[in-house]
Image (cartoon, rainbow, N blue to C red; front, top):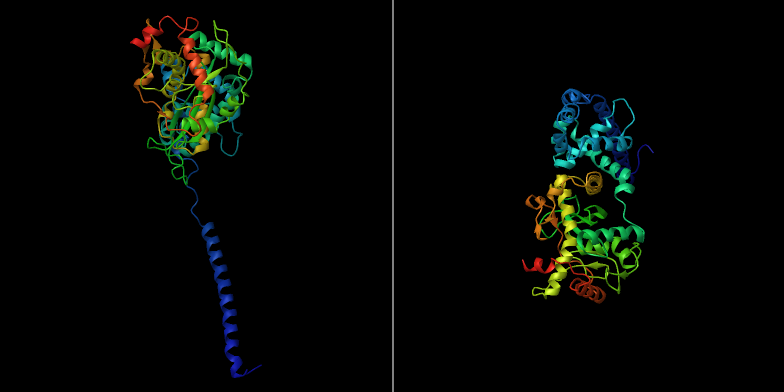
Amino acid sequence: MANPPRHLRLPFLRLQLAEARERYLTILAALIAEEERVRRRQRRRRRWWVRPWLERRVMYGQYETLMGELEREHEGDFKSFLRMEPAMFHELLQRVGPRIEKPDTQRPPLKPGLKLAITLRFLATGNSYKSLAFDFRVAHNTISLFVPEVCRAILEEYRDEVFRTPRTPAEWAVVAQRFQDRWNFPHCCGAIDGKHIAIKKPPQTGTLYYNYKGFFSMVLLGVVDADYKFLWADVGSNGSASDAGVFNGSVLEPALREGRLGFPQPDPLPNDDRDTPYFIVADDAFPLRPYCMKPFSKRYMLREERIFNYRCSRARRVVENAFGILANRFRCLLTTMNTKPPATVWIVTGCLTLHNIMRMRYPNLQNADLDIEGDNHNIIPGAWRDGAVMAEVEAAGRGPRQTAEGKKQRHYLMKYFNSPAGSVPWQDAAIDR
């Protein structure tokens, strides 16, 4: 149609314009893509893969120089540097090293000993990754990647040996006997408490990790035996939760309530004839139940109640001391952790594992930091209380605060501790001070 009629000419022109516009956009997109390809090809090549001062690590890095000097010349300073003896460091390196060793690639990987030393130094001081980068001459972004990996490797290597929750009545009976021998509190299978680990606010979490003390945190809930070792721990609950809330939401509470934890069957207390269940002890933030005993919280207490509180406090104090020596040894727990929640969990569990290792290998180490009893059984506060400590978890928790069975059992224990069968000679003088 050479010369279309007037009534068809306008739609025909519109169709031609649409086709021309589509061809133009196609050509324009192709030109932009080609320009981007040329730009990528012409992009300036890296000046270096590793900064030159990092490559001089062997000559000036603290792992290659300072640590060797400290081990040769003064083991005490080595212990101050990494918070452990040289022999313990070498044991860790021998056992954990294969788990953190990387295969050779185009560039040689970092030595396992270097990664372990940087991780232990971070745990001991809480220094930033950039600060450690200048000390050890390893890039800070590389440090941020392997520190959680090393902590995870420590946990996996030593978990069954030093961080294993008892499972049988015989194993729990050993724990209870130790509480009876050391702290005069029979049938106690552990002391439980919670602490806040300060963290940087995770992105897109709102106030989920914001606690009632006014900072962002994760909750560390732990059960400790009579020798300040952690038997069980729950790490990672958001800071807005309470001790009781974390406890009720953990796997521990239903296991205790349903009798699946393996506690011994109820039997008589020493010099008694009535069967009494086994339990853990806690502070007032936890609910009172037959498997969880806590002190009386009345303002005006009877003498019998004050004696029970004194006896309960002697058993419960071990968990406070355990948290104290844990944080004094691994001071990263006293800083604000600038890591994502999953990495923070591995770091904290790594600290707990190392704490248990040190309590087993060197049981007298850091005992000067603990609360001690004087000649008259008066409590002398430990050195850890003079420094910074992790914040308590005290907000009210969900669930019933106490049950009738729990009140009945606490009342029976109170009567027992005030009777000739269960009293200790110094308890009356202790509450009169």
